[in-house]
Length: 242
Image (tube, rainbow, N blue to C red; front, side, top):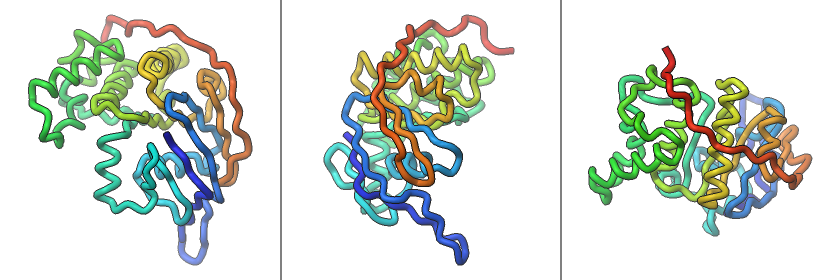
């Protein structure tokens, strides 16, 4: 599904060249649940930006689902993002005065081939997939942090992406709620075969992945397969946050 070959990313800060990635090569197969770890500045977020078609490498190649996307134009990368990639972030990035259903529908606004009825149906299905049936009309402030992250996951799923990219998705959540969110990722991976790449600095969160890739100073220093700790998804709490 994803392959990068001798990937470099160099930022020019005045007279100083900062090498954020230094010749990274790796493959991620369809259906894998992978955790990417590393300290701040190790290169993991830079890699995610390139894999997410938000940035281009300085040199090297990036193949997504067999197509070389490393040299595409911004408009072409935007099209790839909308069709094949879903994003979940540490901050939920929900629109405050918009319902859960409307937040999930945002990626569909530019889909002229899908009717409004179908957009509503797909958004409801995405919310159901993360355990939020019945909360379609709740505003973000009426939902707990874990529920808000579930809405963000549903929004990432609504375009039926091939790859889900999650950047520190549990960073704003307590440990119990973090496990609820990770359980959803595992369920999506097992039942739908969704490829998931999870950036985290927390070893306990990485323990739920099938593979851990660790970065240091812009390079991959380890790439380990493991038997993950499997979680059982739980329904979100009934009460909304006050």
